[in-house]
Length: 91
Length: 417
Image (cartoon, rainbow over all chains, first blue to last red; front, side, top):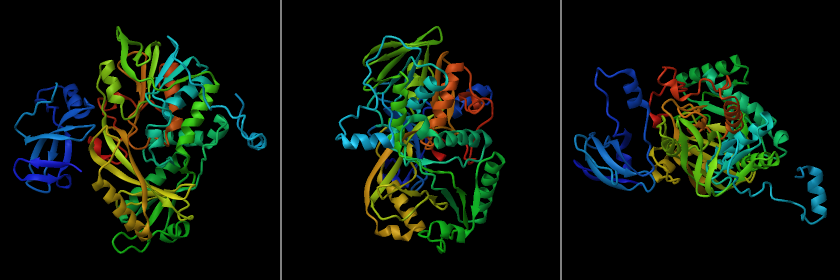
């Protein structure tokens, strides 16, 4: 069971949240070619270790959040608002 | 190596069972092979078996990080079926099902293949139409499919609560040729048969690097030294991204958790495989009597091989909705496997951007039933350096080319399939 500390609502159970994908990929600009959109939509690093992810607090404030989580231990180390930057340890 | 037979069971029984030998050799790695298969699960062992038996390439090493049968081969719910909608998928899975039907003779190994029937229940008109469409697609491609009405479901599996007030059962899509097989025996059988044809099965040998020179694979670095080969096949579902990153490219895969459960042993209760249409739940009964059941993904990426409780709770709740009698049942064990989830829910058996490097990957949570077909197509692709028509659509490039194989129309979300 994960506990995720929402910056707006405080520590909550994972049942209030939904995983919404890898937060390290960035949508290309409108002039980018199809290849850039392919990479954005489909290619993933899929790291075995720390990953910055989108989670939506859809059982609370409904905000999209960035979460730094470990994909082996499931440890949640940092949670931030969508506009902030989270650094991956050792990256 | 002596074969297995009923006569041999009898004669060994009379001799105190002293004549049995290990089912495969403990091979030590040679410096070079014609083909290296990374991953000693069902798919990797099947690849090696079909390379040796169909294509005459027996100078093959199968490299396994742990021991045979410890990965996803030993972590699934043993269901075999080919009830898919899209022709690219149902033709592939039907080929796999036909291989299953003759597998025990091919391998000289009892994999306890049991064609007990697979029923997908539906609970609304929309689900019924989707089931009819899928059944029709199967029949158009020569695969058996039948639609059951509620009385037909009740006759085949009386324990199901057909008159459920919240989720009434309107019927089911039945594939009689579907069923279950013994998962460990599948790994052992392929290992036994590949080994008998000269394949080296090398356990506790983890790949730590890929040797790529001039855009072509030359071999792998392992915890037991460097091993060279002009062709390398990856069959490492769950860890595919880790290995392709070593070779210098990313793939459309996210690794997710899927849990499964087994109950205490019971007298015969369910003699087919049933999936619930109104929640994530499916169930069959093993030969030991335990119910084997599971549900959907936990929902976020993980390599942890252990699930979390909210998903377990959902599985039990859905199971009790379908079969209220399960409320009295005690769970015995639960476990989780790591799944290569793809953006369209279909798999990859293909060449890769590195020349001589091939892969069978992206099995989402449907890898077990594919075991022989995956190995067969992967072996073909490796041997001929081009895909068979059964896996020609299952490439990494299909998203770039706009031909996704999205069985359920869920869109490009890895966790939605």
